[in-house]
Length: 280
Image (tube, rainbow, N blue to C red; front, side, top):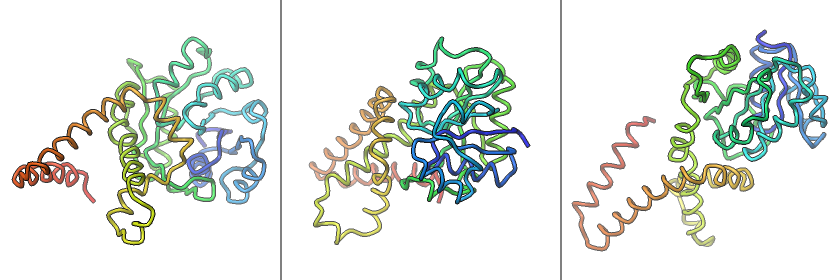
């Protein structure tokens, strides 16, 4: 056992998968879920994602060794600060958020040094939400990013890293700034583009769509509330990535308008080279 008690705040797809993975791999003696809806939490118990639950944050974290916050990114810092007065000294806070700098800014100067916070982000989301879709192997062979500006890894960072490794993740460490810049291009912009393609398509065209449209727009089915929070939290890096994207689309438009077939072929070949580098 890595921990006596792991408390998961927000038992949805990711939080439920954390609970399932931690219990399956015996990483905690007990996993406690915290949330607002007792019906959802009861369902999480039935599915084996958690051992017990509380709708009261304070009572849910009192005996926790590790608190994993799985709320939308605009609520993570506030959740940690509300939980902090009720935990024991040495309790570790971590999260699964897709943005990092906004959380660190929200905690700056407000969290006791006796309560370490280790930012983490498993790259294992899906367009489907809810604990019903949680999977014990969701993090298997997926990258989890731990963000840190520490010159050397603290004990808490090493423990959180071990936690994610034990759940099957490949752990990568980078600064919060780099995380937000990279994810703007690899996660946040693609979601906006998928949504843009979906919005641009008349409903009555859908019966004539095939795999290309379905694959391109799959992630547009994600939770709008969750993604609104991500876009707002990581606004500047997303805008930078968007400017690069729109410049490439402007080039595509120019090549198409001028009938430059050779230029179009080069444009498509460059895109194919990047996609091929990703693998299957």
